[in-house]
Amino acid sequence: MRSFFEEYSRVIGLLLLVFVIIIVFSTPSMILARTITTIDTELSYASDDATPVRTKMDFGNNEHLQKFPEQLGNWTAYEYNTTGLAERLNADVMLMRAYSHPKYYQPVFFLIMQSNNRSSFHPPIVCYPALGYTIKEEGIAEVPVHNVSWAAGFWRSEEYEREHGLVFNETIAAKKLIVTKESKEEGKVTERRVVLYFYVKETFASNTVTMVRISALASRNGSYDGILNRTKEFMGDTVPYLFEVQKEDPILLTLFSSGSATGKVAIVMLFLVPLAFIFYPSISNRLKKR
Image (cartoon, rainbow, N blue to C red; front, side, top):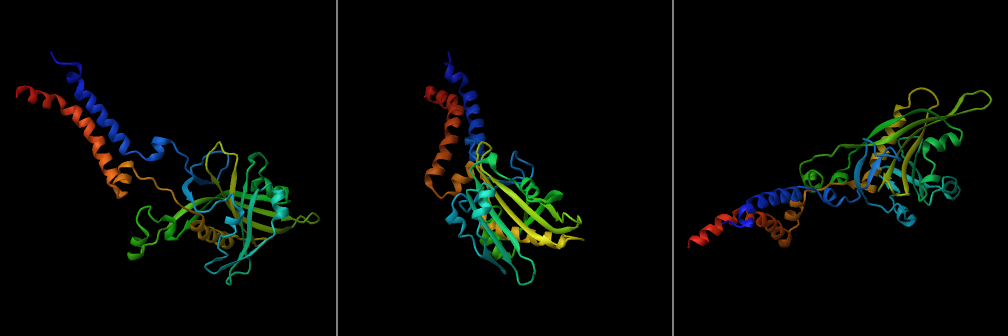
């Protein structure tokens, strides 16, 4: 009479094999449910525009933020004293600079801020009206990021991109606002701004808010497309200094590409265990016949 183990070893082995295949072709976050940082246009929920990233800068460290480059291509920065502004916006950490370009008359204004109190944080859609602006338009802008380093190791290595003359051209989504300020006496537009911003989010439960914002003055009337394109261009230039694309390989590929013999042995052992269960009855019968 066959034992229970001999009777069902193949079924057990097949179930184990399916389990192993699921594990090795999953990503670490699928198994461990680890937090992935995203940049997103919405603060209170995850939108369809969210992009998973790894941060290159510590947004909670003022000294680290100050190391952000003051020269970005032909853009040159001069810094503002943000003490009073930080208090008004309830920001714990802030970097605010104006970047000028020899080709353009108007600078672009660059702001990174972090607040450890979500409830007291003033997002742009609240802040600008509080400062006397009227929101004329609100939408989403697609910001191109051309720098290869942004996506190094995502689809191809940076060396491969350089050797083959390829340029990575991907976009991120930013919230777009067009705001104006009018004179109280005549009701004429005295100022118009183009504003692009996004949030850096680690987990929904976190009370910390990080925002990256680019803004620039536009002509008071007519088209603002030129200024919008300029702010999109500048934001795209800043992204590779702040983030890199978050890519998760399946566990199988990660272990095999690590170069470690231990990882390769672990993969082999994971597959050998269910195979041993599957072929145990055949092996056992052969041994008995001898």
